[in-house]
Image 1: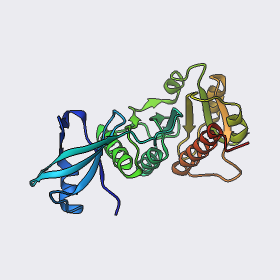
Image 2 (image 1 turned 90 degrees about the vertical axis):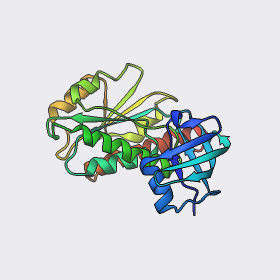
Image 3 (image 1 turned 30 degrees about the vertical axis):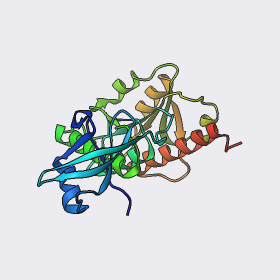
Image 4 (image 1 turned 135 degrees about the horizontal axis):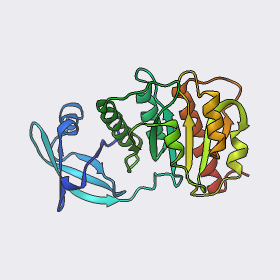
Length: 247
Protein backbone atom coordinates (compact mmCIF):
# COMPACT_ATOMS: atom_id res chain seq x y z
CA UNK A 1 0.00 0.00 0.00
CA UNK A 2 1.37 3.42 -0.94
CA UNK A 3 2.03 6.01 1.76
CA UNK A 4 -0.90 8.49 1.98
CA UNK A 5 -0.19 12.14 1.11
CA UNK A 6 -2.02 15.28 2.27
CA UNK A 7 -1.92 18.92 1.30
CA UNK A 8 -1.27 21.07 4.39
CA UNK A 9 -1.16 24.84 4.59
CA UNK A 10 2.08 26.35 5.89
CA UNK A 11 0.40 27.72 9.03
CA UNK A 12 -0.38 24.15 10.17
CA UNK A 13 3.34 23.36 10.35
CA UNK A 14 4.89 24.52 13.63
CA UNK A 15 8.57 23.87 14.34
CA UNK A 16 8.96 20.16 13.74
CA UNK A 17 5.29 19.20 14.02
CA UNK A 18 2.19 19.32 11.82
CA UNK A 19 -1.54 19.18 12.56
CA UNK A 20 -3.86 17.39 10.13
CA UNK A 21 -7.48 18.49 10.60
CA UNK A 22 -10.95 18.32 9.03
CA UNK A 23 -11.53 15.89 6.15
CA UNK A 24 -7.93 14.77 5.88
CA UNK A 25 -7.85 13.89 9.59
CA UNK A 26 -11.03 11.86 9.17
CA UNK A 27 -9.50 10.08 6.16
CA UNK A 28 -6.33 9.24 8.09
CA UNK A 29 -8.26 8.00 11.12
CA UNK A 30 -11.27 6.26 9.58
CA UNK A 31 -10.05 5.13 6.14
CA UNK A 32 -6.29 4.65 6.51
CA UNK A 33 -6.74 3.55 10.17
CA UNK A 34 -3.71 5.57 11.19
CA UNK A 35 -2.12 4.66 14.54
CA UNK A 36 0.63 6.32 16.58
CA UNK A 37 3.95 5.64 14.91
CA UNK A 38 2.49 5.28 11.42
CA UNK A 39 4.14 7.23 8.60
CA UNK A 40 2.38 9.54 6.14
CA UNK A 41 3.45 12.40 3.87
CA UNK A 42 2.41 16.02 3.55
CA UNK A 43 3.18 18.75 1.02
CA UNK A 44 2.43 22.44 0.46
CA UNK A 45 2.90 25.33 -1.97
CA UNK A 46 6.63 25.54 -1.24
CA UNK A 47 7.46 22.48 -3.35
CA UNK A 48 8.50 20.47 -0.28
CA UNK A 49 7.31 17.02 0.68
CA UNK A 50 7.55 15.98 4.34
CA UNK A 51 7.71 12.50 5.78
CA UNK A 52 5.74 12.51 9.06
CA UNK A 53 5.27 10.10 11.97
CA UNK A 54 1.91 10.23 13.79
CA UNK A 55 2.42 11.15 17.44
CA UNK A 56 -1.09 12.01 18.67
CA UNK A 57 -4.52 11.07 17.35
CA UNK A 58 -7.94 12.22 18.50
CA UNK A 59 -11.36 12.37 16.89
CA UNK A 60 -10.75 15.37 14.63
CA UNK A 61 -6.98 15.86 14.52
CA UNK A 62 -3.78 13.97 13.82
CA UNK A 63 -0.51 15.47 15.04
CA UNK A 64 2.73 14.27 13.54
CA UNK A 65 6.47 14.78 13.90
CA UNK A 66 8.36 15.74 10.74
CA UNK A 67 11.10 13.21 10.05
CA UNK A 68 12.52 14.46 6.76
CA UNK A 69 12.01 16.95 3.93
CA UNK A 70 12.48 16.22 0.22
CA UNK A 71 12.03 18.18 -3.02
CA UNK A 72 10.56 15.70 -5.54
CA UNK A 73 11.05 16.61 -9.21
CA UNK A 74 7.49 15.92 -10.36
CA UNK A 75 6.23 19.23 -11.74
CA UNK A 76 6.44 19.93 -15.47
CA UNK A 77 8.57 22.88 -16.58
CA UNK A 78 5.80 23.77 -19.05
CA UNK A 79 3.41 26.53 -17.92
CA UNK A 80 0.13 25.29 -19.40
CA UNK A 81 -3.27 26.94 -18.90
CA UNK A 82 -6.37 24.94 -19.83
CA UNK A 83 -9.11 27.33 -20.95
CA UNK A 84 -12.15 25.08 -20.77
CA UNK A 85 -15.66 26.12 -21.76
CA UNK A 86 -18.14 25.47 -18.97
CA UNK A 87 -19.91 22.14 -19.31
CA UNK A 88 -23.15 20.64 -18.14
CA UNK A 89 -23.46 18.21 -15.25
CA UNK A 90 -20.29 16.96 -13.58
CA UNK A 91 -18.03 16.93 -16.64
CA UNK A 92 -15.90 19.76 -15.23
CA UNK A 93 -15.15 17.53 -12.22
CA UNK A 94 -13.47 15.03 -14.56
CA UNK A 95 -11.64 17.76 -16.48
CA UNK A 96 -10.27 19.32 -13.28
CA UNK A 97 -9.25 15.97 -11.82
CA UNK A 98 -7.48 14.63 -14.92
CA UNK A 99 -5.98 18.00 -15.84
CA UNK A 100 -4.42 18.19 -12.38
CA UNK A 101 -3.06 14.64 -12.63
CA UNK A 102 -1.47 15.42 -15.99
CA UNK A 103 0.33 18.55 -14.81
CA UNK A 104 -1.70 21.62 -15.84
CA UNK A 105 -0.70 24.82 -13.99
CA UNK A 106 -3.93 26.82 -14.44
CA UNK A 107 -7.54 26.10 -15.35
CA UNK A 108 -9.58 28.98 -16.71
CA UNK A 109 -13.32 28.19 -17.01
CA UNK A 110 -14.85 29.95 -20.02
CA UNK A 111 -18.27 31.36 -20.80
CA UNK A 112 -18.82 30.92 -24.53
CA UNK A 113 -21.78 31.41 -26.85
CA UNK A 114 -22.79 27.72 -26.51
CA UNK A 115 -21.75 27.00 -22.92
CA UNK A 116 -23.67 27.39 -19.68
CA UNK A 117 -23.45 30.97 -18.43
CA UNK A 118 -23.26 30.85 -14.63
CA UNK A 119 -21.36 28.92 -11.97
CA UNK A 120 -22.09 29.04 -8.25
CA UNK A 121 -19.15 29.66 -5.89
CA UNK A 122 -19.80 26.24 -4.35
CA UNK A 123 -18.85 24.72 -7.71
CA UNK A 124 -15.53 26.55 -7.74
CA UNK A 125 -14.79 25.35 -4.23
CA UNK A 126 -15.72 21.80 -5.26
CA UNK A 127 -13.32 21.95 -8.23
CA UNK A 128 -10.51 23.21 -5.99
CA UNK A 129 -11.08 20.35 -3.55
CA UNK A 130 -11.11 17.84 -6.43
CA UNK A 131 -7.86 19.31 -7.68
CA UNK A 132 -6.19 19.04 -4.25
CA UNK A 133 -7.29 15.39 -4.02
CA UNK A 134 -5.77 14.77 -7.47
CA UNK A 135 -2.52 16.42 -6.34
CA UNK A 136 -2.39 14.07 -3.36
CA UNK A 137 -3.00 11.01 -5.53
CA UNK A 138 -0.66 11.91 -8.40
CA UNK A 139 2.39 12.91 -6.38
CA UNK A 140 2.31 16.53 -7.48
CA UNK A 141 3.19 19.36 -5.10
CA UNK A 142 1.92 22.72 -6.31
CA UNK A 143 -1.83 23.50 -6.34
CA UNK A 144 -3.49 24.29 -9.64
CA UNK A 145 -4.79 27.84 -10.03
CA UNK A 146 -8.50 27.37 -10.74
CA UNK A 147 -9.83 30.76 -11.70
CA UNK A 148 -13.18 32.49 -11.70
CA UNK A 149 -15.04 32.03 -15.01
CA UNK A 150 -14.58 34.74 -17.65
CA UNK A 151 -16.00 35.27 -21.12
CA UNK A 152 -14.20 33.88 -24.15
CA UNK A 153 -13.25 37.40 -25.26
CA UNK A 154 -11.91 38.32 -21.80
CA UNK A 155 -9.70 35.24 -21.72
CA UNK A 156 -8.00 36.24 -24.97
CA UNK A 157 -6.76 39.38 -23.25
CA UNK A 158 -4.61 37.23 -20.92
CA UNK A 159 -2.47 35.91 -23.77
CA UNK A 160 0.78 37.79 -24.34
CA UNK A 161 2.62 38.09 -27.64
CA UNK A 162 5.28 35.59 -26.56
CA UNK A 163 2.70 32.97 -25.46
CA UNK A 164 1.33 30.14 -27.60
CA UNK A 165 -2.46 30.04 -27.92
CA UNK A 166 -4.11 26.90 -29.32
CA UNK A 167 -7.81 26.61 -30.04
CA UNK A 168 -9.06 23.12 -30.79
CA UNK A 169 -11.52 22.77 -33.63
CA UNK A 170 -12.18 19.85 -36.03
CA UNK A 171 -10.40 19.86 -39.39
CA UNK A 172 -7.71 22.41 -38.57
CA UNK A 173 -3.88 22.41 -38.44
CA UNK A 174 -1.78 19.53 -37.12
CA UNK A 175 -0.98 19.95 -33.42
CA UNK A 176 2.36 18.15 -33.78
CA UNK A 177 3.59 20.58 -36.44
CA UNK A 178 2.73 23.57 -34.27
CA UNK A 179 4.52 22.05 -31.26
CA UNK A 180 7.69 21.38 -33.26
CA UNK A 181 8.15 25.13 -33.62
CA UNK A 182 7.55 26.14 -30.01
CA UNK A 183 10.25 26.92 -27.46
CA UNK A 184 10.99 25.89 -23.87
CA UNK A 185 9.09 27.72 -21.10
CA UNK A 186 6.73 29.42 -23.56
CA UNK A 187 3.37 29.61 -21.82
CA UNK A 188 0.73 27.58 -23.60
CA UNK A 189 -3.00 28.33 -23.57
CA UNK A 190 -5.28 25.45 -24.60
CA UNK A 191 -8.82 26.44 -25.59
CA UNK A 192 -11.47 23.70 -25.51
CA UNK A 193 -15.06 24.35 -26.55
CA UNK A 194 -18.32 23.25 -24.91
CA UNK A 195 -20.89 20.73 -26.09
CA UNK A 196 -21.59 22.02 -29.60
CA UNK A 197 -18.06 23.45 -29.85
CA UNK A 198 -16.98 27.04 -30.48
CA UNK A 199 -19.00 29.12 -32.91
CA UNK A 200 -17.52 30.17 -36.27
CA UNK A 201 -17.44 33.74 -34.97
CA UNK A 202 -15.41 32.69 -31.91
CA UNK A 203 -12.92 30.83 -34.13
CA UNK A 204 -12.48 33.95 -36.27
CA UNK A 205 -11.99 36.12 -33.17
CA UNK A 206 -9.40 33.64 -31.89
CA UNK A 207 -7.52 33.70 -35.21
CA UNK A 208 -7.48 37.49 -35.25
CA UNK A 209 -6.06 37.40 -31.70
CA UNK A 210 -3.14 35.23 -32.81
CA UNK A 211 -4.37 31.79 -31.72
CA UNK A 212 -3.65 28.72 -33.85
CA UNK A 213 -6.68 26.58 -34.73
CA UNK A 214 -5.57 22.96 -34.33
CA UNK A 215 -7.15 19.54 -34.64
CA UNK A 216 -6.92 16.38 -32.54
CA UNK A 217 -7.56 14.16 -35.55
CA UNK A 218 -10.46 13.00 -37.72
CA UNK A 219 -12.70 11.86 -34.87
CA UNK A 220 -14.91 14.23 -32.90
CA UNK A 221 -14.15 14.10 -29.17
CA UNK A 222 -16.43 15.00 -26.29
CA UNK A 223 -15.54 18.22 -24.50
CA UNK A 224 -14.44 16.36 -21.35
CA UNK A 225 -12.15 14.16 -23.48
CA UNK A 226 -10.62 16.82 -25.73
CA UNK A 227 -8.78 18.78 -23.04
CA UNK A 228 -7.32 15.63 -21.48
CA UNK A 229 -6.11 14.37 -24.87
CA UNK A 230 -4.67 17.77 -25.82
CA UNK A 231 -2.82 18.09 -22.50
CA UNK A 232 -1.43 14.56 -22.79
CA UNK A 233 -0.09 15.15 -26.29
CA UNK A 234 1.40 18.57 -25.52
CA UNK A 235 3.13 17.50 -22.31
CA UNK A 236 4.44 14.27 -23.85
CA UNK A 237 5.80 15.95 -26.97
CA UNK A 238 7.41 18.96 -25.32
CA UNK A 239 8.76 17.24 -22.21
CA UNK A 240 10.39 14.56 -24.35
CA UNK A 241 11.72 17.09 -26.82
CA UNK A 242 13.45 18.79 -23.90
CA UNK A 243 14.85 15.46 -22.73
CA UNK A 244 16.19 14.77 -26.22
CA UNK A 245 14.11 11.63 -26.63
CA UNK A 246 12.30 12.72 -29.79
CA UNK A 247 14.14 13.39 -33.03
